Image 1 (tube, one colour):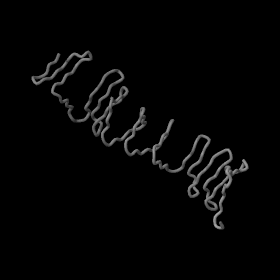
Image 2 (cartoon, rainbow, N blue to C red):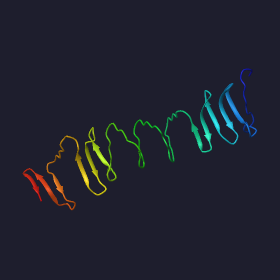
Image 3 (tube, rainbow, N blue to C red):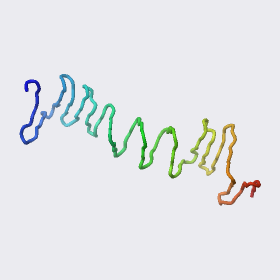
Length: 178
């Protein structure tokens, strides 16, 4: 039209743009600024403002920069994420394994139990001074290691042997020890 250049397919077939098999095909939005580079039997690269952002590889794709997904992201297989920030609820269909600590602000709600190996401790208090743990030799502990007291409050308290026999029972009249 005198101002714009165009390539138009006017027939009923397909428009093909082909290289010679050894060189690249380059599309440039302006002179000297890459937009798309197609390599023979290799990668396709996409650029934003002359900076490569997306590249096909022999194993998939490589993306440089952020991904803004405005819908569901469905990933099958192993995913290695270095830094994840989740806003809202996250649901895990299987186990979630963490190799470092987890910081939680709010309430942790479970529907079953907490499963810890022998010698792992549940620690409470600003200085981890209240401990509950079970050793590999079969001994279990409840410890207050700080300067405070340990209170057990209940209407009645029963200490029982493994076979279920009461060894110490408190009541409104005192303590029975057997």
